[in-house]
Amino acid sequence: METGGNSLPSGPDGVKRKVLYFYDPEVGNYYYGQGHPMKPHRIRMTHALLAHYGLLQHMQVHKPVPARDRDLCRFHADDYVNFLHNVTPETQQDQLRQLKRFNVGEDCPVFDGLFSFCQTYAGGSIGGAVKLNHGFCDIAINWAGGLHHAKKCEASGFCYVNDIVLAILELLKQHQRVLYVDIDIHHGDGVEEAFYTTDRVMTVSFHKFGDYFPGTGDIRDIGYSKGKYYSLNVPLDDGIDDESYHYLFKPIISKVMEVFRPGAVVLQCGADSLSGDRLGCFNLSIKGHAECVKFMRSFNVPLLLLGGGGYTIRNVARCWCYETGVALGVEVDDKMPQHEYYEYFGPDYNLHVSPSNMENKNSRKLLLEIRNKLLDNLSKLEHAPSVQFQEREPDTELPEADEDQDDGDERWNSDSDMDIDEDRKLIIPSRVKREVIEPETKDPVCSMEVQIETIEQTRGFDTATNETYPPVTPIYHMKKLRKEC
Image: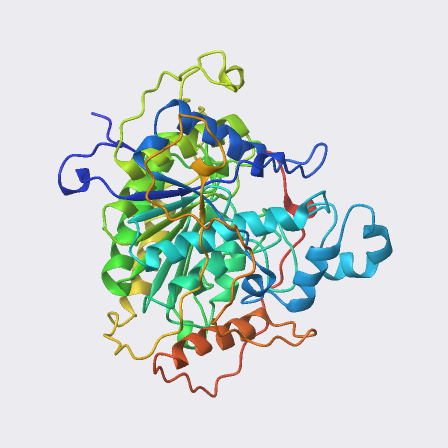
């Protein structure tokens, strides 16, 4: 009997969750350029499937308020955010030095509406964290988010703003510990790098490792100083299938949950780990990919689901639609309903596609060695301590407008209880403490330690340390390492 990704599991996990879903109808209009593999249109295709499968009526649908400059600067450097805010396709030739400095160019091009795009996807992830912090939902979803490669001072791997880091910083205001899990085929380098020296965020990345972008994520990269053993990297080879993937995923995540005991979980659901992806070389089925969502859901911990990579866009839409059903506990038929993008899914017009017969280069011996090594690393951690809460940093005030107020489409949920900000004001007085970033600061590891220290100090944490921070791991350029498998 097949159970992988079943969205109506038996037992206690059969209980439905309150799910909140962020979507901006404009997100599908952004265009990276001709021939570029990243296509925001996939978010619109996903939404169309959710609408026609009737899933929107089972959750609150919210349009995110765009993140402001000050929100982005909680992680990113002021001058980098200012550059993203002002650069346009027409003016970029006058800013060649800054383009090079901030790694904006071929892989991360300047396109019309670039900064608005960043504000939109970051706003959804931050807004999801705020809603989880307030207990307004059990699971928050932002399929436009999950852009895990962006660094403090530079774009990388199609990512400009690291919405994941910003969302985790928001969750840390409420939770002692936050777990980040990444099932994108590429290493979650930007998130790992940001939290490499802290024990309040654990990062776990399952990824292709070898001659592959971004070139980081060795199993020996385990964190530094207070963060030692709080970074877990699961390096995989081509062709990994569902069974092999979960041979690692389930025992490792189970041990992480036991030892780390996070107050909230962020799961990056990059769909480029699916079989047949344009840039990927794994062999996961949609149900196998969704089994990770189902497994994280079973722990009953506040959960933020984000998108990420995924370059065969019809399969990305299939995957995130099905995983929305898993989050809701709603069964989704394999036979696809008629909708505006129906012809993308021919000739079978089914939600699920069969994995290929490609070779699985991950031997059981190799998988066992990886599993034992990582479980051994986890055994070196003390169980999560009980931390006395004191005064905490105020929550970010980000009212989200209800999607239903902007579109009369009756397929969308009309019963959302979300309060509407009638004026739709984007500038909201903020009481959030944030670091003051010097324009020339280059070390994202050091700056993130300052950011977390700011949060901890408001709650009475002792962050004194005499450790010296290590240099940041070199990041390799996408053009050199990206390849189609």
